[in-house]
Length: 122
Image (cartoon, rainbow, N blue to C red):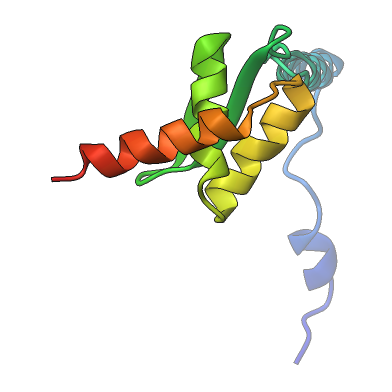
């Protein structure tokens, strides 16, 4: 059975905030919002620059997560030649980055990479 005046007693605050307390709460909320927005905007940009001309930079699946594969010049050609011998997601990613970088690999380089791989096996 509802008691007379019970709702009013339960829902009435014990005291009102003073104007100084309200100002402190509002200032704290504004500082928090500005700090959150600053953090979001500071970390939202792309911090990794594009690779230089003739350089290959790819992040591929590795044993414990993303593995960076980077190389410039002769090293980039060797990376692209090795990956041309395979047909898997990792090699396709590297080959795509080789195409984007404009690294041209000849059939002779691809064959030499396959031969080096075969001779490295025991």
